[in-house]
Image 1 (cartoon, rainbow, N blue to C red):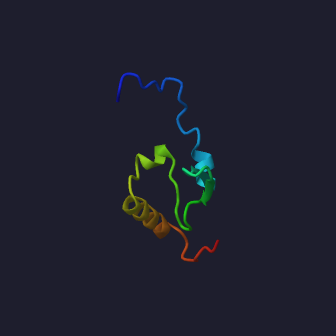
Image 2: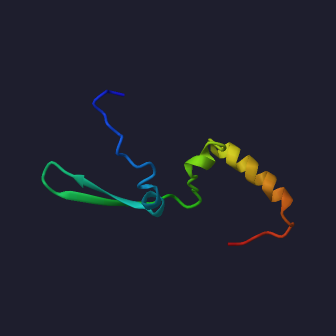
Length: 80
């Protein structure tokens, strides 16, 4: 990190709620036109908060923990 970078007034997680809902990217083209694109997390994607991610760093770890939890639940399938 270069010394001239100053993040002392930065706010951690400032934009994460908006990102989880979806976001828009505006592309400024050389011809002066704008191209706007909407993005959202794909169906089935779950975003972990940073404190949870510290314990579950990848999909395999999350799935293993959830499968262990499923074993503790009653045998009826839950539908959303």
